[in-house]
Length: 350
Image (cartoon, rainbow, N blue to C red; front, side, top):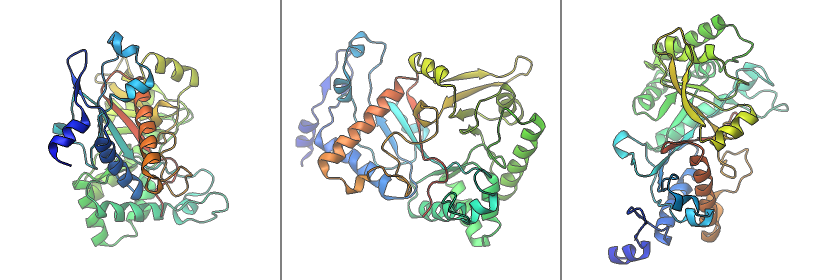
């Protein structure tokens, strides 16, 4: 297809507010399909997808039905790591964050979880997760991964050769491997004493600083049932975190925040401490958890359809469903950035 034919196929049109958007032609859909196909065919990957939307403050946009709004999406971006100069203020920037939440003791002991023992209770092997993550990140430099529980990482790290450790340090320096929270575990916020919070967070941070030179800057409390001001002020005043993300929230509070477009904001955690305000946001597409959008879990333990096995018609329909879920989530916040947490418990195993 020539450039002239492609431009004619895309069909640029001018909206009432004077902005120019693109209708999702077969060409643009195919390019987006290629991006999401790549996401489905590998173990860990981060894809920066920019989606054009119009301001919800305009009356003409409020009157559009979902099918009409869907046509406003402009996509077609390959796998990439987003940087500041790539962010477009005129579009919705969708951040896909591959991660895994690995309970440091829950249905099984820590050792059973790590080595994959007693799998009649839960089929989990954290060691396999780390082997898979490192191998997959090395295969493609656009892939990224976020990890939290330093206890499991320390068990894996202490069993590696110096060469493997240097490889991990390279992945960290290349901004492919990131650590959020960085504590020994993702501690509870209701039943724990603040000294316990400080001690186990310090233990994890000292390990990461000593071995990798890493200082986590983002709080990642996705699974605790309830969230405290003590935790928020600890993250800001004492740890210097820039942001805090959590998943579980009371269903009535969540429903109200979705209606009021307040699923993120600034939390002034203490009236007595200076610099205790922290940005907070919900994970799990604002649905009270921390998993991927419905129908887009690609872990080996999930049963969602794999995009690489779809024909073109089914693939395009599935991608449009993805964009529709993105639009719904974007309507629940006020900025032009949204977070998609792409995984749940003990995922990204072989």
